[in-house]
Length: 232
Image (cartoon, rainbow, N blue to C red; front, side, top):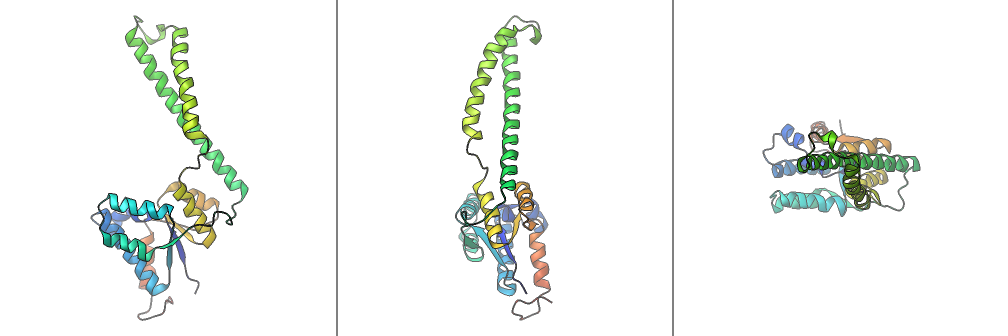
């Protein structure tokens, strides 16, 4: 039997809906419970769950610490998740996928800039209306509106582009999850819709974080007592 491999995103252990389905009261209990399932699957079925190192590994440990998880939970992360740095030089991704990704991100960034510009324009117009003798917003001099608000928006665009547009590739941990899964020919486990979309684009198997624990439990149920990892 071919051993299954999964690449775990932080959301695979922290998803709120997964916690509810598993009946875990707190985040730490939920993380510990899922890691226990992963441990059983590794020992009994030879299923390996990888985590990109150091990006997702650090993100997950920081998340656990910030939510008050104890050292036992952190030890489970270190023990049962296989840490591996994705080979960013050798993993080949079709140029069309990369092009679509960049185009998608550029569109989202421009859309965000448009929403922000609209908010600036509305708030500035409101301020001008309140500080002038105009009876309505339509009576505000167009020249004043253009010179005052237009200049502010122009400066905003420059700062926005410098802060967001140039060099952005969204989340490094998310990209590492996809690269490592591609390298290992493994399934991706996450609750992030963005990861799901690009996993599908790359032809990777995607497992929603909500169904992952139940799926592993089903594997374990079908395991013969005292076996060496073979499924019925």
